[in-house]
Image (cartoon, rainbow, N blue to C red):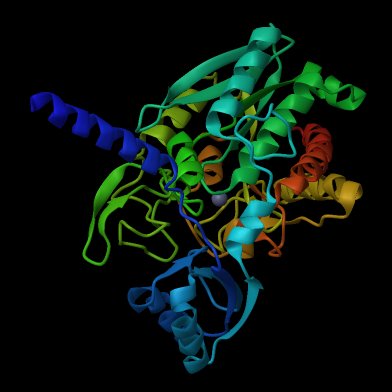
Length: 422
Ligand SMILES: [Zn+2]
């Protein structure tokens, strides 16, 4: 009797485990809507829609005169469209079937590391380990572990004593797969490309790369919900949706924290910035890692995100206050945009994020600039400008990598001219 109970228990565990593997949410016939918000009245009503219709906002709602994207399942599309008509909010459907688009991206967990496919965390980390083992000028460290215990890996490339460093971080937002794909592309170029100019830049500068700041969220986007943005720490309870998980880690850094933005207090929201700043283990370890280097060593800090093709400079919390060397950072950002344009004609817009976007605080680039005194910091919003948005097909990864590497080359040259590395 006892044995059969045990067998049944074990069998159900196996069934559960199998079910868990297959549980990744599908988005068959889910549409992506782009709604244009004209005025404050519309904005206030738009913010409330998710209280009564089950929708997934892809952006935090920060200001008027701009578009916001929303994912809506088949059961709720009619109600959503009716509501928009009622509120006189203009909209278009940008993606007719989200699952069909996701299926277009090559995703093969067994494929070797490349930049035409999106890869799971293990594949990315195995590749990082292989590079570290093969090149003695790479110093590879686990800078800490995520809430669920996954390593956060770093690679420091240094070929010469006394160099100054450029730090690149990726995928703090889980769903932005193009971020870690691009950051690993750049790292691969720095290590393995024959481009003479790029190799010169690896002799004269150190490069520090943290390809995956949010491993828990990233794994969750692969195994459960492709649209997940935050980390996975249980953070509270919401009457509307029960237990809540995760903090938007690029809203949790302690520089003018919570000084601007939507003021999201529901812990289930995708942009919940925490009860207070600096609460998340992943970003605390990233901060400790940055602080472990001598002051003045890291001279540029670049955080890679999607999407919109922007170089967002400090500050995020204000559109009236600007950093002391803002004009200089603008010239450096312009050099990136010029360099990136040549390959495929992709245009990058640059400027203070509070100005180009809307005031939002607690981002890594603002902390790196405002607290760590790194003289050039930015958020790079990669392709595209909204055609595929967060769901950029994998056949664009290499092109994004190429244009961003070209942008980076110009950026470093210009930053040197401007005395950033002195
Ligand atoms: Zn992001």
